[in-house]
Image 1 (cartoon, rainbow, N blue to C red):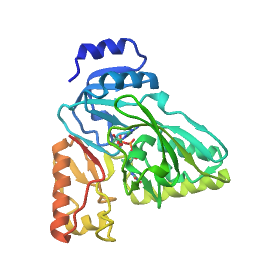
Image 2: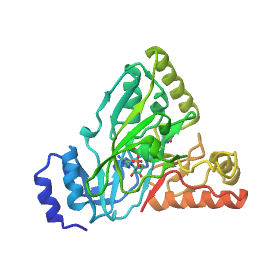
Image 3: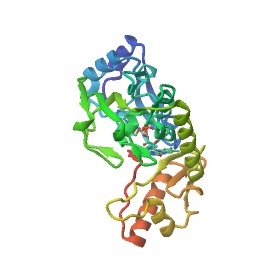
Image 4: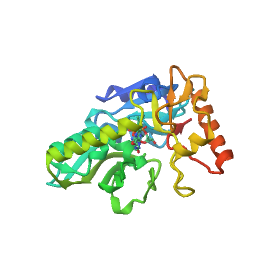
Length: 303
Ligand SMILES: Cc1cc2nc3c(=O)[nH]c(=O)nc-3n(C[C@H](O)[C@H](O)[C@H](O)COP(=O)(O)OP(=O)(O)OC[C@H]3O[C@@H](n4cnc5c(N)ncnc54)[C@H](O)[C@@H]3O)c2cc1C
């Protein structure tokens, strides 16, 4: 680990904050996690660049968004966690049909901004509780739309502090992922929408939110869909395979399966990483032995 004094000195010259021994539990939707020896919250691009130039190639870095797709280990995180500050969440309109959003902006904020700007095509974002950065990494989507469908380009920074602009045509997006290097931090992205009527766009947002609330649980400690749909092996969805392979009241400690949607796993009270990981492994193995199908996690397990 980088010399803590060096980091303390660096923190004196910046507006952003460096926290030491930061509790990760409250930083993610599962409310599970250990301690990050160093947790950096940059408040400007210059701060992020200088930080990466000094420490970026010495350390493993994990960029945390809204924490809605991660399961974190209870132990001590081996590396530095970076969480982009408020300055990375600006959203603005570039032209009649295009907008740019900082990667710390939430998907919901972008969807609302687009609606206010009479821009359609972003309604699905109102149903995904993450940030733009997490959505780009996961190629998140719902109701037959994904990030790749609206993306024009990404602005990113690598672990040496070098900034790159990557047009969407140069990125190979797949279901819940892309082929970009693991070391890239997304800074912002530009998107293309379609001029539309504000009230029609708002109605569509309401309709999608309603549908989502009908089928998926809300206000619980979850990471959303635990497993990806195994689209290359079967037409059946992950939840259908789980339903026929596992008793739905299966629990490991306080880790259980949502009654509303069996691909959503829940921290019912104070589940540990091990409880949730045991549940995930149990379900994966049960689906394999009952159906022969290998299901892969959609949530990212951070060790
Ligand atoms: C209740 C609920 C409902 C959900 N519904 C959906 C849904 O309908 N569709 C769907 O696709 N997903 C859904 N999800 C999953 C999740 O919301 C998405 O994957 C979301 O895009 C993750 O964004 P995040 O900011 O929370 O990322 P995090 O969980 O913080 O991180 C996820 C990954 O993205 C990376 N990352 C985050 N920000 C950046 C950045 N700036 N630069 C580089 N890498 C970055 C992280 O390093 C990590 O690898 C749901 C989750 C929950 C809890």
